Length: 155
Image 1 (cartoon, rainbow, N blue to C red):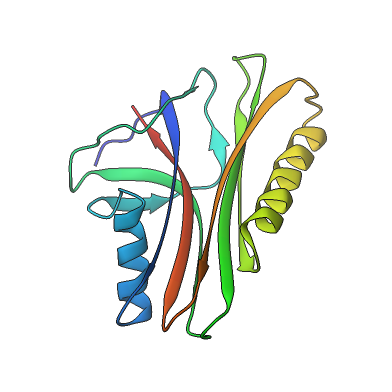
Image 2: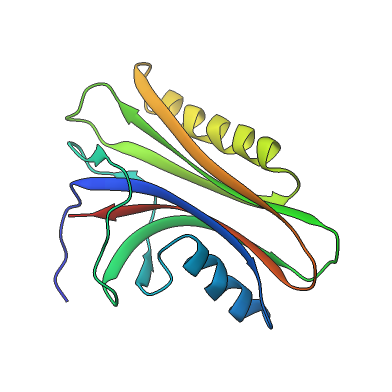
């Protein structure tokens, strides 16, 4: 396997019900349009000079670096949510950060928390000028449900 330094990143989110917890997670990935990829969970750094883009169609079966949040529940009626936030310094020679968060609760609350986490990551790095973007999704569980949000990094 060869490794590369990503040049682009984008946000995805999906939710689903499934026959089992794993099937629910798989269907949420399909709903997020990355279900036929091999996800490699990464720690949450955006390389310098990496650009935020819209969705990129990646070849099926590819190994893709992903920072993600996911939650699965079998508690009927429960709201579950997942969110990610990316903070990118205005100085493009510096790395950015991705924060992930999932919990019981509504999308707006989870997104507020994950955005605060990204802001704190910039604060502890001494970076005050940055852009902040986020994506979150919620799901109301019927039987077995999953909420999934991710930042995908690519060449």
